[in-house]
Image 1 (cartoon, rainbow, N blue to C red):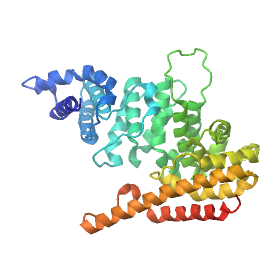
Image 2 (image 1 turned 90 degrees about the vertical axis):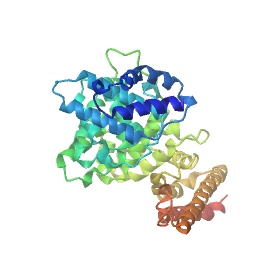
Image 3 (image 1 turned 45 degrees about the vertical axis):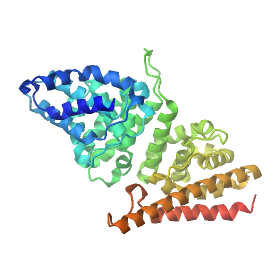
Image 4 (image 1 turned 60 degrees about the vertical axis):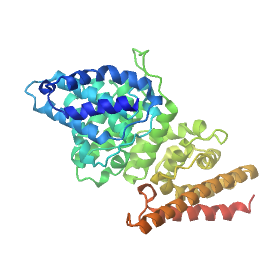
Length: 420
């Protein structure tokens, strides 16, 4: 399978966004036309081959095709647009990513391979704008690309990107598009959260007043007078996890707080407590629920008054239950906050609750210590071999902050061990 993928990838590179009519041998043209057949076949066999790492080079071919689309004298150059969709489908296939809407929330971010910058994806936003609301299938491809790769565009294209997200999350769009746009918003959550740093006042207003309620409308759609029976069967748990991670990131910025509770995101989070804060069925959702509710200033949110003390404790102890993502910067940012929240609401905890809590904290501490040791070894190896500047692998950067969080949780564990 890998050999077949590699051969078709060479075809993509050989064309390089050019004109197939100039292919004197006809080999590239015939192979290119096979892409529409080979991609669906390969997708069915996705569990039997390894993905390719040349995503950015493949995308550069797509960029060149789109450049020809924009420079075409035709109003709508269908042949080139079809070629662009075929190329994108091959990229999904080569990266082992399904474009089946039912699998939308089942995939993590794929490996991009080559280095890239936000500017490298500006053409993708231009492509999304080019088709606008006239090409739902192509729009789904683009949103899937942005959401699956975990990338965002440059500041110059942010306004256009947000406007298109709002469009495709709108209630008149098919469910597949709305969910794909929500996933793309999740990928751009850091940029969306820090929107008050932009000088574009109009963009700030659009994001805070229009994007915020539109995001929630995807999770809580209004009943349609004409129900659609063929909507994909989405993985609601994975979708809700992405939503909670998005909202938790937004809650980091106090400028978002009035909109999070005014547009009922906080009400939505509170409604998820019974489902995701059950200590007997731990999920990662509880961690982001805890982070969101603790980041919101209680005095400003009357809806938090409805959260009982028992519910607070269920949220806090459940936040420690699931696997701690040591590679997620936000997890380390939230640790001190969750430590303080746990101290505050543990006063109603039973002896067995405290015993389980300390076991969970010790497990997370051990994970952090183990990874910190690995980080230090990597730094020593890189420094000793002269292959780096001693900063270690990128996924382990920020070690001082990580160590501070680790020590904070450790102090907490030791302090309350005697209460058991």
